[in-house]
Length: 225
Image (tube, rainbow, N blue to C red):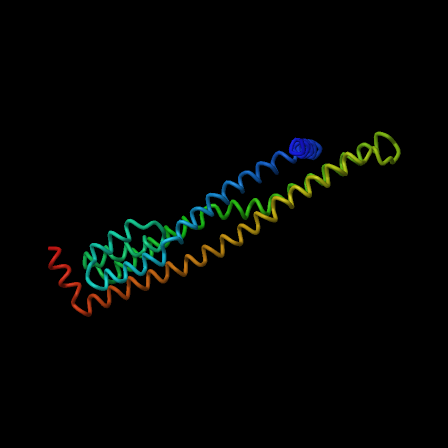
């Protein structure tokens, strides 16, 4: 019975807020979907970073490039993708400008994937309060319109318009605050992943230099051919 009462009160508040509550609810649902998808994507991207850096470094350092490529290819995430792009160029003896360009291109693509959806959250966090303020203006117009029709000021006449104004303002802020927190959190996570991608890039470049300098790359290439 208590749950039904709470549901009824929420539906009543939604109805009393006027038509501006509909776009606000749509904004909240859109933001919720993006937050869930983004949280999963960033968790997956970061999950295996430490392991893949360690395994690939150990395998490639001992000349097992094929196994290192397999590990990087089987691991999801932007760091693994960068390692894979660099290791393939090392295996094909395309070290230098071409390898750096391939790593840069892969990093740009992965960064675009990591930042996907953030613009939606930023837009919702900015637009939701504005929609609430628009509802406030509409509510005050309704209140003053009622006063104009009645020709006198009575609390009962303006109560409906003021209620719309307060409900829409509250709804806009309730949506914007958690969405803004989620946006800032995701930006922090993306920045951390960018540092990990740079670490992966540096590891590939160091591996290419070490393998070529020690002569291991020549032996690996000869064995593969």
